[in-house]
Image (cartoon, rainbow, N blue to C red; front, side):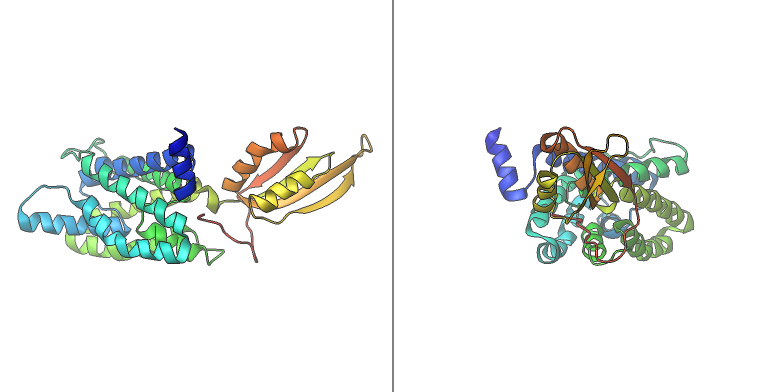
Length: 298
């Protein structure tokens, strides 16, 4: 077990929990596609949606029902792996390859049914979109991706303060759905669009690195230990000031920092060890403008 932990940390900077989160997210996404989208003859957006369209065309030409969506998706993602390697990080590149391989396996082995699991189409689209969004968000929260528009989204949103991965994905998908509408009709296009809308909303809710939070840490001890953890481990700057409690007239230190919600979870887990008497006041989902770095991937 220690060998596995060492290997994950050395090559992927992952712990077992992060790896498990990425695999579960990949499974949820793949299950939602095969169980709720393919079974309703609908289409995903982005690279996977294009892979579905290409798989459909090949299957018709060869008169076969073989499921090759995962393999096509893997092949198309290879150039995007290079983008991840050059523009994001080598660790993110390695993690993405792992997730895309798992996605290929899950898309291939999870059965697609000729009859939808849910009879009502809008309900099926809603459930599929929510599951797909949660899955994608979990993978992104593990500082990885399932390739495709996730890589493009991270590359672009890392440079912009106002653009989220969900927004980038939605914009790119317009082209896919225009093709989808021309090939299969307006109804298929509309419900496929609804699936992506639901999915994109959930991605931005579950992608913790994309949610900014303000944190105030109150302590009566010297806050240097807490501040150094924030600076060295989270690579964020922190502002500290000294105040006085009006009730006890005792000296109190307040440290203020802006973090992603993902970084907040790390800080919260370490605070009891840094200062067991300190407490945190936080505000999630705040708007941050100016020179604040989005750390969407490690």
